[in-house]
Amino acid sequence: MDCTLRDGGFVNDWNFGNGTIKFILQRLINAKTDFVEVGFLDQRRSYDYNRSIYPDMKAVKTAIGEMDKNETEFVAMVDYGTCDIGHICDQKDTFIDGIRIIFKKPDMYRAMELGREIMEKGYFVTLQLVSVTAYEDRDILDFCHAANRMQPYGVGIVDTYGLMHKEQMWHYFGLLDSNLDESIAIGYHSHNNFQLAYSNTIGILDMQTARTVILDGSAYGLGKSAGNAPLELLAMHLNEFYKKSYHLNEILEIIDSCVIPIQRKFSWGYSLEYFLAACNNCHPKYIGYLSGKATLSVESINEIAKDIEDGKKLNFDKGHIEKLYAMYQMRNFPDDTAWKALAEKYAGKDILLLAPGKSVTLKSMYIQDYIRNKKPVVIAVNFIPDAVKADGIFVGNSKRYKMFAEKLRYMGDRVFSIATSNVSCIYNKFDYVINIENVKDSSDAIADNSMAMALNLLRILGIGTVSLAGFDGYDMHNLAMSYCDECFNYSEDYERLRRVNRQLKEKIHALKAVMDISFLTESVYEE
Image (cartoon, rainbow, N blue to C red; front, side):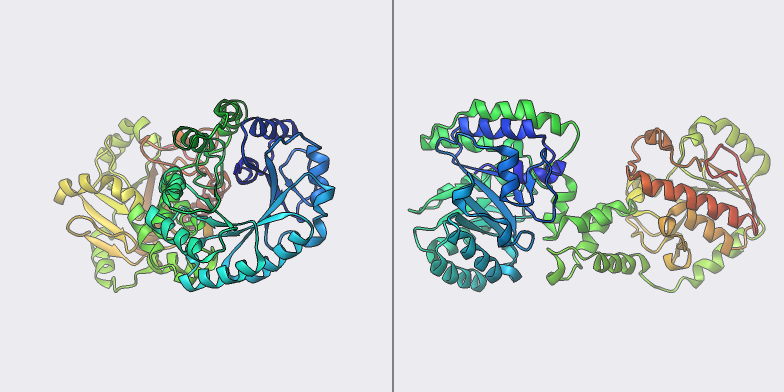
């Protein structure tokens, strides 16, 4: 079963272009692919000649036209709740042979009823158990009982988030194989979060069964999130070990002519984000939300993800993850001693605050001259500068802290450390720990921005004079030039970075009413 035009559409919003859609379909026919998904049926989408997502069967016929399918069978997919029976004509009036229905556990029986109505229109139907790991064994047995009464063409095991290892896959297959009528095919649809899509898919073939088995794949693994099992690998394996005769070169032509150009514009496949999601048995959007904060180390992301409620793991709940993130950041504990010690240490002193902008390196001689002449207390924010000697380090970002924790350890008493309570110390302990709730900013884009929190800390301590260096701001034309160290990774969420620039500028302008703030190096935050 090829899923390139359907699952692959999650990568490019199904905008393959009509010529490419027809090219892919013809090559798959030539390759002797058994089943090909032409795309989604989704009544919420308007008809677009160039996209493999259609509001109804009439649109499929209009876009693709009649094709000589030889022995290949064409199917369309319906995500339960997005296309009602009125948008599906009788099978005799279309060249589509079957319909696959995907659904989550709460919709199981309603989806099966839709399947019965579709079968009455002449299509073969497969029922796809989305997020199969959310099903208990009892749920699978109940499903099998209902499916045996319905008699669909097939049932699909869908590892939506790539959570399963081979042993789990075999378990679900065994349950279905032991309890479904032998006339019902069993399929497997994988995702590559653990780099197991291909091995798990061919692992189905190790099961001793008399029934038809359907293996899902897509050209070059093109598909949602971590991608699918590569169709070309499945075809190669089946040719070599099961005496099949798929024409591999036809699939390779699809990859070379159609998929590689998509890869130049969009990304899919195995990644840290999807690996973390699978490790925590959760929806990838949770990891995307936490990673997007750009303040959390991988360890911190894992700690938060482990607290996601079981009932919410596979259904993204933004409010829930925002609450967990806020709770993690708070870690409330008394910090009165730290405040008192800091106030005594820096009362009446001038402060030079260093941010890790490119100008710290480019203007290092100028900054050093300033330090020699003015003798301020030099505090670096979330980095240890090489070109300028710092007296102390302010740590407000656990992701950045992990990058220099070892170096900070060996600096020992030569520098002092101030950390917000969301950062866990790796070696020994920080000199001063401040509850993050006391220094977080009220503006959304910079709420836990370390520069904003460092400035809030100095304001609360009553510091009168603050000089800033390295507060360059984000350069939207060349983000790589925004930092003094190329190892600092940076977000490519340009809209959020623009908001950070704007809100930090507003923040500094407001603070000038109570503090004498000056810039030693050029900055987008200057008025």
